[in-house]
Image (cartoon, rainbow, N blue to C red):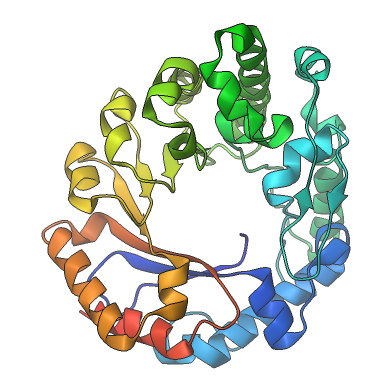
Length: 346
């Protein structure tokens, strides 16, 4: 999700973030993702500039966001949820209207054989990202530091072992396997954090815990949390800013995450109780995810009612509340996006 635009002007909350799916760009403007968006740095930078121009012309000039003359910039390739699958030589598909996708899973034997590489930058796809960064910096005359977006322990365990991994979390016979896989992912992430800190001291880490809600609070607490807590302690010790993305219902996890008291960013799903997160993490920026399907199908009256409820929930906390509208699909009415922003007009 590397294409995002932020709206700050004339709204009563910190910001509203808009993100458009590859399908929106492909079906609406013929901008294809596919292999070119990953492997052709020139194509990706040109596409990024065109996408930002389109955004401004369609939305930004009315909402006070973006620019009518975007400049070419460094844009990292994004394997999205397939980074670890690509690293482990899964068959990754590059579709014109979607982020990269891969299928399959590691066998128990392959899972137990996982080892943290000596230097992940020498391992594909990270080596590809490193080479492309050099190419982009040389072309633009910039000096953007080497950096990789870190992921989530359970998320990646599920990606490389399939949905069966949820069952493994609850099966005592698979305790060794789940521990080994999660320990492998944790080790890769820690190595990445060390590299990010070295090359870009201001970089942070966000726990990508999309799958925690599917596993359930009990399984996450008993089998996964300790790996995340170890990474959290490492970040705090290294003064690495640390945040949390939990796009499922957050309510049952508030107390589980509470020992991570120095989280400076918490993102919660649309079925979560906003006030519970605001009160539970008084020092963190809270970001609330708007339901994608709601944005596509709701009427203006429903959007107005939704916004009224959110504004009531965040009253007094507006300066640390963000609204995220991710994965906007093709077919989402422009009027709904404008109605949402207008509903938060200062």
